[in-house]
Length: 144
Image (cartoon, rainbow, N blue to C red; front, top):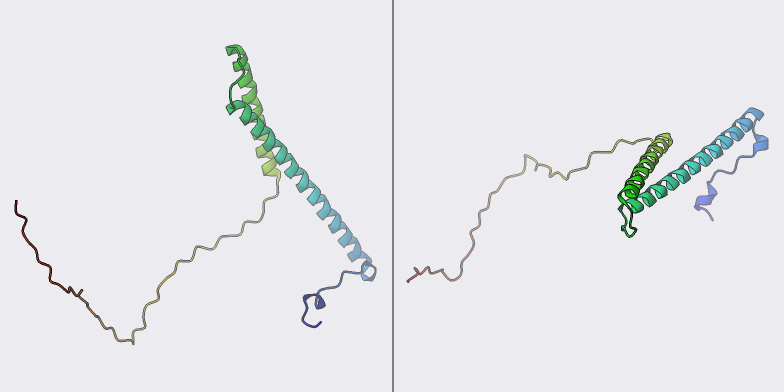
């Protein structure tokens, strides 16, 4: 059918028709893209793991206190918890620094609707209207 989107679509590249240098370059680029995709997937998995561990530690820290602990046990627990939380936050910050940053596109300033001035050649007519009061209002002084 004419006019369909698939008619003008580019056909897949036939590697046999390309010069040897171009075919090798395409193969290297495909390998590089696959390696980068694996690295990104690994980094996202690591981030999820660290976020999960951090959430678990927060549940322990701020969760319901049903266990009875001595003051010494509680101090040791809180100390270990603070160390673990600091370690996880440092790992999370490091992983976020390692991720490739998406190119930042500058945001366009928000458009404000503006009313354009009327052309100068138009005549300006001012019309004042007063409200029409059907029955006249009668004011009666208050008698006490």
